[in-house]
Amino acid sequence: GGLWHTWLDRDLGIAGRVIVRRGDRSFEQHLVHIDKPILRVPSLCIHLQTGEERQALKLNKETHLTPILGLINKELNSTEATGESTSDDSNSGLDPRHAPALLKILGAEIGCNPEDIIDVELSLCDTQKGAIGGAADELIFTPRVDNQVHCYTSLNAIVEYSNSGKLENDPDVSVVALFDHEEVGSDSNEGAGSPIMRDAVVRISGCFAMSEDNELFKIGLSKSLLFFRRCRTCNSSQLCFKT
Image (tube, rainbow, N blue to C red; front, side):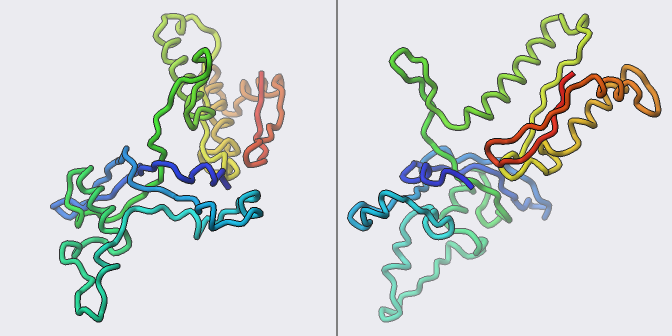
């Protein structure tokens, strides 16, 4: 799920990766970020909604959240009666699965011919920049603060600590654990429900006392506090331990 109403009436760009065919018939991957408003998911104007609909906004993800890229003037203005063709020779060779205008934008951004774009994996993204706000500039107005900022500060802290000269005399092991796929249950290979954390602790303990039965890990585990953390987002259970 998601807070879909927050996507309405926003200036949206796109970001992701594009697979491009090279001249030698091999393929290469390009990361792309169109940081300008080329898409929008408009909300329905007020005079086309009833009072009940305005009070209880219900969005169909398949029909109400389709972003608008532009106007197809030629197709709209051409009719069979006038004998005009709706085909565009400049679009020949483009992947018919995607809008020609989008492929041309991607080609211009990457620096390749739109005809060489084989596939795309793109997501919408808000182009509005973050800002400092509040009466005393104490607030940060920006999306994704809960995850990305914490990932950045954790990594930055462990990098600074490793460069401080104190790491050599530290008897403990400093670890930053960053997991993916919380929104879909955390049970993927990169999720918190996977064995990756336990395996990491087993390998770390094995570096201090090499043994076939990982006795040091078992001792540490027996002295640790095991608990389950309930994710508030997806309601999944995650096994954690604290020594």
